Length: 246
Image (tube, rainbow, N blue to C red; front, side):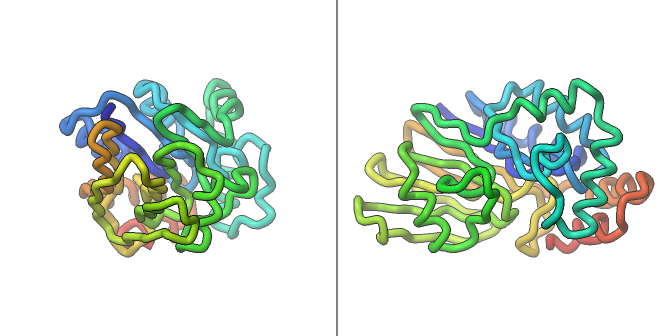
């Protein structure tokens, strides 16, 4: 099975449409989305509609949870908090209901999906280094696990039964051939708000037959996304950061 994995979308329809078109060109049998469909961007309902159309396997992200009142925004920065409030006021009833029923964690025979860390999914912690990756890998029961949240793409490989035998590849674009005996933790980056100083939208492909794992990038119309954010009255910093990839 060839899986297309979408990272944090954050209401950026310009990026999502380009990524979906690119993944369709490459051909996949199944779609996964790792949470945070909404937040920051100006087109949350449009993004929800497209994700639902793809029939993705999805988990809930921290922004999704905050919008539907399942998570406090106490620890959100002021811009994120303002975006949550703006989004909540504009989503349709069916959008809110859709987000509300999303699970924290999905485990299937072929893969696991969680927004932050596998060992504490309800805490929405970040996988940013080998330290956090090891904690998640200790709880991982499937060959591969897809995560997002940090917006920084990476592939962590545990190539033996030794929990400390973990290697990582950090790169805007990553390609790795994995073995069935290995555990693979893929941080698939972000579709709608990359934070690795590469403003291009990120997405991932995983082939369960060959073990091929790839994180790829594609350019999209950032200026269009910025204009929509500013026109919506959202904080200008949310528009400015898109061009910087931060």
